[in-house]
Image 1 (cartoon, helix red, strand yellow):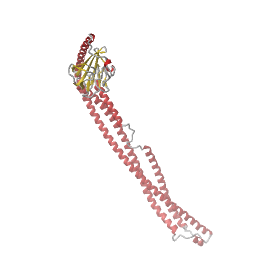
Image 2: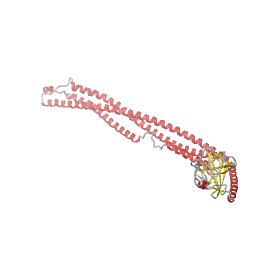
Image 3: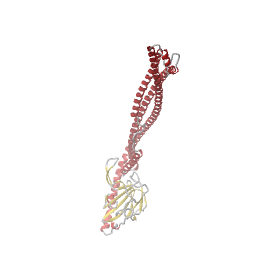
Image 4: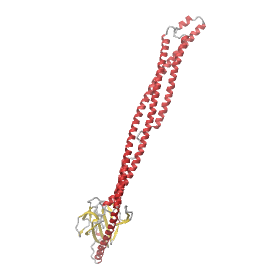
Length: 464
């Protein structure tokens, strides 16, 4: 015969009361668990949608941009310097300083705009990180409170469960076996009542076991949620700290850029004032340059007249272009003033002066060359000194007639000469060195060609 323990009917009601209380605690905990999970899921969804790696923004290649800007600035500086041909170095530098200050100010203002934009971005990231941290900390607090409440319910339930388990499986003074049920039942009704009590006891046992299993699962779930919330708070706190540091750095950079802009504005005002002060000197220089140009034209006219007379009398002082052999100065009948490839920095012809805004004529072509670069006789002929305020140290080379035309070559702004006045030179002979004397803002080659007394563009000659 199978023997089983059971509870009397009088104890069954008490047991049901205890189990009901225990299962209500379990139910409350299950509800809290589900509610907590829903809140956690909502938070995680918000975080997943809001998460953007802090400080990770798409940027262009800064180094490449910087190199391009530097090259563009150097090109602009060269063009400006070339356009200032015909003014003194001091006045030209005042103008260049103003242009440089304006360019630097524009760049600094752009940098400031970028820095302020970065600051706004970092402050938004900091606020986002702070908000996410607040949500995570609130969630951790909720989880902790639920865990504390569940622990209290669990303690109370555990007492009831323990009592029931002991009374059911170990028995007490009120517990009897199936043999007791059968032997002590006087009537069928009595037997049915005792059997019903046994079934109730079995049901209570199942409830107790289920309650204990649910409690263990809830304990594990609570711990997992609390651990996850703790980890999330720690991670978000680190992100918030990082965002705060980056925002502070961006704020400092923006302040630095604002200071740079203020300084550059002051520099620009100073440069503009210096240029305004020297404008009177510019007018004097332009007057002097015009006088020098008239004197040069008169000189060239005299040389051209002498060449024409000699040519017409059959005393040709020049050569035929057919006799010119290709060399390091090119293969034209008029060679280059320097060896190597020519880089035009200021072309021949009409141009607008950058300071006065008036049109002027450039009677030669300027080529890029460093201070001290050797300059050579582009033709064979007689070299004479030619100095003036605007030209500085200069040389004329009278080539006589070449293929029926009179040619005079002029070099200006030399730092020094390598020939004596009136010396006969041959094409390719060293005659002087590149400089920036006269009205020039920097070293370069100034190369003039007069054909039959009229200045022409050297770049239209064969070999240029």
